[in-house]
Length: 122
Image 1 (cartoon, rainbow, N blue to C red):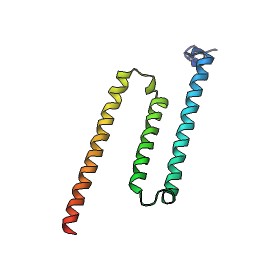
Image 2 (cartoon, one colour):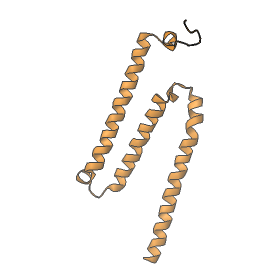
Image 3 (cartoon, rainbow, N blue to C red):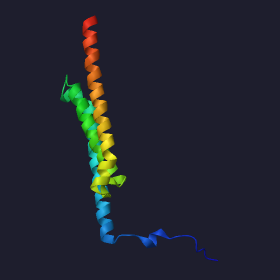
Image 4 (cartoon, helix red, strand yellow):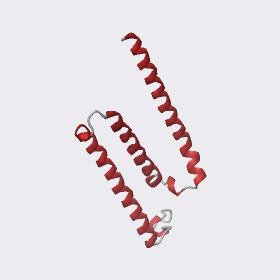
């Protein structure tokens, strides 16, 4: 007896073979881009003393920027936020952007304050 309560989703695909090729090409591009950025981060982490001695401050900022780029590509492509309307993307991403700016402000402000306090005692 054949069941009639199982839905065959593969028969109800919403795109043609050409659109499927475009989607696969986009996913392949993002995967290669993320791999390259990760490789740059790893190589920079391993060889930063040889490339830029006495520049740990800049290396940290490069890591932060590259990580933010990776996070943006992951969210936009693999979590399908890039397919949403611009207003929806803004509504979802703006609280995170504001929160990250707030955290950066607090970290910089407190680091400066602690540095000033330590100068007094040392």
